[in-house]
Image (cartoon, rainbow, N blue to C red; front, side):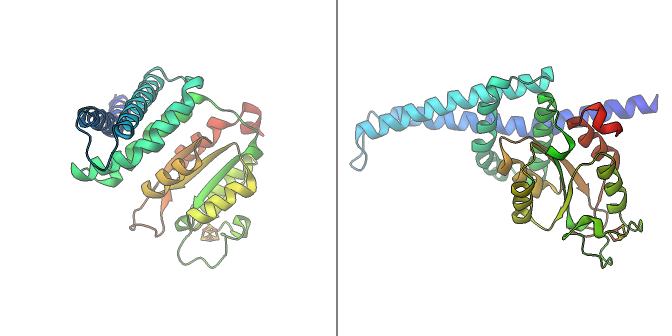
Amino acid sequence: MSEIVRVNNTAEKNTIKKRTFLGLLLTALLFLLGVAFYLLIFVRYPQAFFSRSFVMGLTISTFLLTLLFLCGLLAIVLSILQKRAFLPLCWVMDKTLLLLYPIVLLIGRLTHITQEKIQRSFIEVNNQLVRSRAVKVKSNKLLLLLPHCLQNDSCNYKITHDINNCRRCGRCQIAQILELASAREVPAIVVTGGTLARRAVKKYAPRTVVAVACERDLSSGVLDSFPMPVLGVLNERPEGPCYNTRVDLRALQEALDLFLTKNDISS
Ligand code: SF4
């Protein structure tokens, strides 16, 4: 019984988490619509600096963009509710997330919603969209990206150069993560930042990525990688940020298995 209550609470919490970002996305859209209507009024009284045709062009572009983002938002909400992808609309969804994201963060700042809460909610939305696309790939076309802070701070082995330098002593979770990845023959890389993560993606040319990181790094990584699907798993910071962090291994395993066929999982 308590398990059912816990599952229900988690589901409710996830919905609330998604609502934060989706609500801000809608607010950003209304803001754009407001700008478009303002321009429509402005076009009647052109100022010396702007010609009427320039303001008219700007107004039409803003209305068209708003319409495009409205389609994107509707497709995102429908994909989440129906748990299935509307593949022809993926491009519009990606562009809506990518282009409205800075406005969402700005509105969040003005309304005193923390960046971390928005980023967490965005990752939740992104993960749901990635799940709904049900992409399956060969294990060598999936890449596991891990942050350096998962390694025990006192460990002297240089796993950023090669994760297999880990001696699997068990003082941190790298050993268990290695087991998960090698059992599935999924390449795993430990990176110290966004630049190295981008370099790894370029080098391995995966079709999909499972990334472990904090809210900030995950959200920027996901946006950088569009249209490639990136499933984000948030790290846990029991000792504070960037230091001896941890990850929910069950969530990580589920994330990896989501992209693999049954053969690859059991191999
Ligand atoms: S499990 Fe690997 S990375 Fe972690 S402390 Fe031991 S040797 Fe170092």
